[in-house]
Image 1 (cartoon, chains in turn yellow, blue):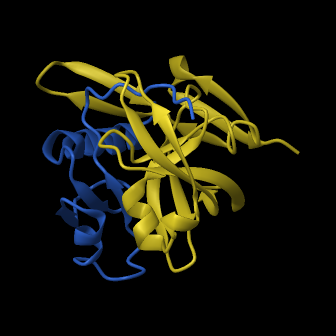
Image 2 (cartoon, rainbow over the protein chains, first blue to last red):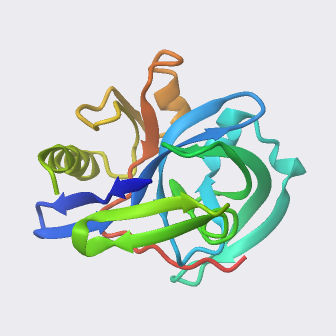
Image 3 (tube, chains in turn red, brown):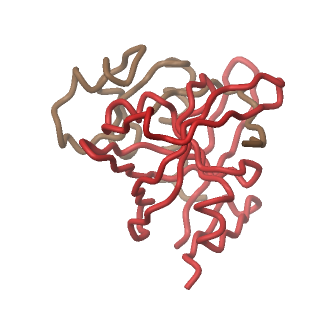
Length: 135
Length: 70
């Protein structure tokens, strides 16, 4: 399935940022949310902001607690668990995601759980990218 | 890139510019911000359930996405 890059323009600096962002629904024991997520080939895991966990009924005490280090070197707790997600136009899949309390994370789809289940082709020069599930 | 995509990107840009670090609820084409708040719970309390909106935290323009090592 082919998707278009989402471009944001910063009028203050004149810079354009083109990013592979998809619509995604995340499902938990008590609720679900339609949101967006960035395809991030540099992220090992799929990560979502911790506020989603609270709203969809994830018990953080039952998650596997680990931590992560970003480019700034700060370590931040991550709570890993399995949930269902569904990217627009694709099937619903159960994957491991981490919930993180970070200003810089809304949703990231990373290598483990997403890139390993899908063949992803970036065509930035055409403003498009493709996601095709690996059979 | 077709006109529809440009419109969506323009709409998205306005949201990123005006709602930095906020949580927002928007329709699929980002054409308006139906609700905004400092927390996800704050947004959900302002909208009807099953309202066909997507909700997300607005990440600033200059945010650097980074590799994560767990």
